[in-house]
Image (tube, rainbow, N blue to C red):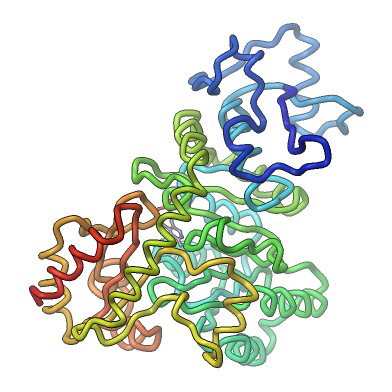
Length: 426
Ligand SMILES: *Cc1c(COP(=O)(O)O)cnc(C)c1O
């Protein structure tokens, strides 16, 4: 199916936010509808048996595409207009060659890991990673003979190198480097470029290319673009900023076609693709992605400044507060485009004080997740990170006095008023 993919007016390249209302969609194919309809259909009618044969030849890779030939629609586990338009639009933000969308972030991550890891392989990963990813690595993939080895985000490239040096014979078996940066909930940064260099040297060692996969959920494509720093694949929980309204669960993987193709094949067979309704909701969300993320990012600075000055707050973990001379300052400015809108802070006291604060909030909601229009607060050590042993929590910098805030798009003075009265309640 040929769809409109205009990215320029004359010599002028259009910005992603200008393309989100039109890119990849041709109204003439849908009765002139300004928005893509929801193609809530399982299968597509071929115009002729010959056409059906041709589509399958391309879908199954039985022959190469002829010049100008396009793939046709077959069946919604293989392709669907809403999913294709969504994927085209997502490639714009990360300037990626290709995208595959999924029905959840975990589906995106699991499909990617299964596409690249085999029994006997080793996956190196930053610590901490998202709880679901941790379970996938240490419970599910372990049962499939894959060994996961972590390196601590806050120890920087030296920590990574130490882990690699300690690998011994395992060094030959490294098949992927998996990175989550900034780390949740501490905002510790991992140097993507340094990981890419080490993956390259490991690949030379074991005679195969070792992909670097980056979970970019926390900063999103607005504030960090891992592909530009040497990542091979970038994964998202689209449930968070990309979706942005706390009303859907979805995921995405982006990168060069060559890296994405195995992930796509696994997706087709595992059936982890995104549905047309989810794809349609995400297209709606992408129209306001820049507005939402910019507003939340600006608000987060006001909130972080307020917290940093508050006598009942011991410490604020916010990328925007890094100062020249801080170990992560240079990396932040090299790798990130803005500090995002996740602010963690430690109150004076512990769990009891945190709970009093959380229970007193009136505007900010007490919930896990992040990246939605509304502000959310949670207590990582007893909620999202509660299955991590206390010693390991401490080593990661997660304390019982820590609260994680996902700053939303409410008026910042109202967000601060709510936090001020809740801090008074401690
Ligand atoms: C939420 C999240 C995931 C999992 O995504 P789902 O959409 O919930 O499956 C993965 N990584 C990070 C960093 C997340 O925040």
